Amino acid sequence: LAARGSRPLVYVYRWLDTLHRQLLGSRSSASFLDIWHPRSQFLSEFAFHRALLASPFATASPESADFFFVPFYSRLALGQKNQSARAALIATLRRQLEASPYYRRSGGRDHMFLLSSGRPMESLFGEALPLLADAIRLQAIHLRADPDRGAQSQPFAGLAAGRWQRKEVRVPHFVPWLPQDDAVTAGSKRRSVCLEATPSTRLREALLAPSSPLRRVPGAHLRPTGRSSAPAHDRRRRAAACAARQRLRTCRFC
View 1 (cartoon, one colour):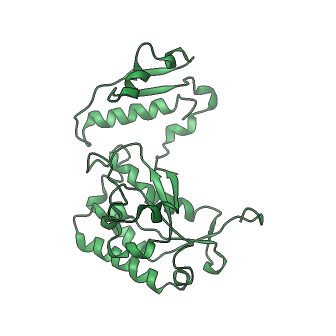
View 2 (cartoon, helix red, strand yellow):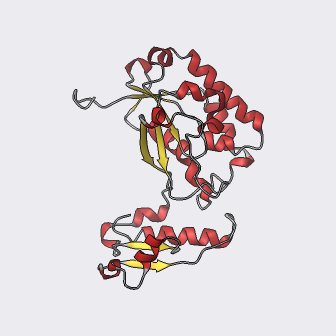
View 3 (cartoon, helix red, strand yellow):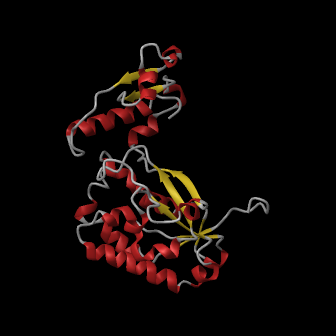
């Protein structure tokens, strides 16, 4: 595409729009839509979908498309207490992919989907997973573990990892844009190296130590923090997240 000097065009499927709206409006999705909750990082599926639709890469003509994007809010669906709603999403995804002439034409090799979770893909996509085996997987990079598991699990459990990782593209996870962010300018970013973390590993201990070479960098901000046992919805967790966001606005590399 770059060789011929044209912008790649992406056709976005609309099969699940109604079911996705119902999913976003459900009570089980409330924590995902709370930007200060750890689950908000899994909005990558929703945010990427909406951003792509609004971008100059989206085309309304599947015949003109170079790629096809398959929206599926897998992590939000997994968090549903109403499992029949999740089953309907997966069944619709499978049925529509099998019926798509564009999917059948390429076997899914020019199709893309975004994965926002480290959960096993079998649990996220269920019976539709084999249809995505040759698709391009956009993997959101996470800075935090899945709050429902305590640690990121391996998405390739039970699969041939090499087959999936050959067509993996890493993308940033969702970060909301807040009104205060508009006021940030390059001149207002005074800090250089910023690190506030628990010294839970040898590397972190070395970086946060009083003798750390990073402390000699002009504008460096290094501060060890204590490990918090506060639940995800606790005010202290929200305050910490808000403070982290404020620090991002002062760091030259953020």
